[in-house]
Length: 319
Ligand SMILES: [Fe+2]
Image (cartoon, rainbow, N blue to C red; front, side):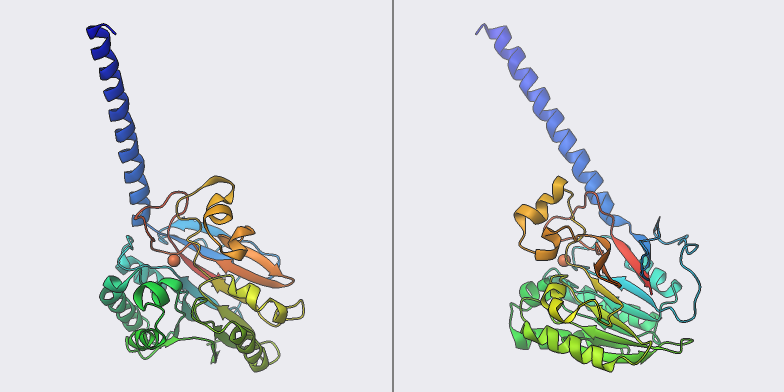
């Protein structure tokens, strides 16, 4: 090849590579910025309803589609915080949850990405608890809490959960436990069943816990199921028939597909989660007749500090 032509080809290649690198940096930066803001999703989870409204950062949460009813329960749902891999303003999250005037706060697991995130996570939980001391905060552990923080060691996980509970008198970590609380202004009560992390729990205990929760429901009471991995719904499926009493199940774990891949490829090819493989990835679903499952896309990130196609969220579930 003549020398000038060789120089020209080399210049073209280097220009092309530079353009590729620039494009990659721009896309990565855009995906990184996506982790810095969150939306508030209002979820009206009564029968035959779909997610009603989404607005950025909760400054103007559209409540117009959620009917006023003193019998409704308002649950502020956050999940998958993955400390220290969380980019949103924690002050803004706490402010938003406080402003939403929820009856209950639910935290659906993966509070930490690894042990390094624990001090900041505990400080966040303590601040949240201090801002809303009269609102019960229910927590279930996630796979990162159990595996990447506690190394699947039951004793370490117990200690970790105790540390979370010590952050405030209104905090309870539920690991196949059930609680029943009064909702101010409502004549009915709320029963909450919190399920232990999938990778450490005795799977048959899910059904036992679910049946215990059903047994605690009086006429008209509402039953909330809280879990990290939505696959737990498959495990208790035989107990959750058309005649079941549960009102709403809340889960996280999927991050809504943190980095969007078409055709649900992440869950169909790269992961083994059962329900997400079937398309239960993010949003409100009719899991079985008359019952709802809401899967939140969470607030933090795992593995990569970026998001593509999903914005971190605080969900307010009304039912
Ligand atoms: Fe997660």
